[in-house]
Length: 199
Image 1 (cartoon, rainbow, N blue to C red):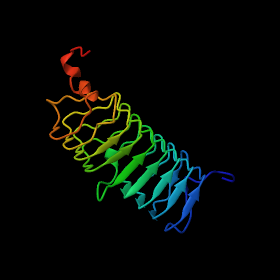
Image 2: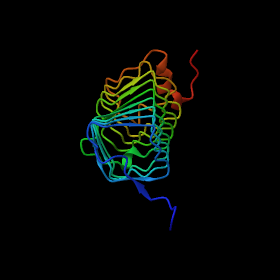
Image 3: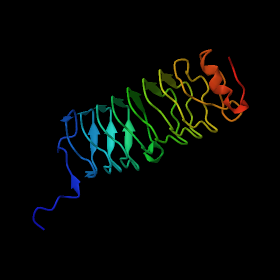
């Protein structure tokens, strides 16, 4: 039918060392492609289907991924800066060589369940109501991150750094926290389950 929008889009034929700016893929299905060493700036992927797309050594700057579908999507050495990533199920993406970092990002209501995220780096991020159940976060860093409502259940946070994080509630009896780092002010987040008042 004339004028009908295609179900999928191809952002470019060349997907190596490419720069994508202000592309709007909202609600669309991205072509199953490999993006290697690409930079995406101001792109909109909200409610888009990114299933089985592979991103390797890519950088996303001020992009919106809210509610995007990332089933079997590959993120290998990927950096997100200033991005909105609301409600993403990272636990459904491809775990092979999974590696990413987040700086000044909003990840509220996202899920990292059961993933192995050793040395994960979150910097200045909002992680409200994020699910870290059964997630391995050994030596992860939460630098100045808002963790209000974040779920830590059977999580491995050994050697993780929470010294500048705030708003978290972590049950020491239900998580592995050996050698994790907390500030003196943040220790209260480890005592919530006991219902005690600290003044």
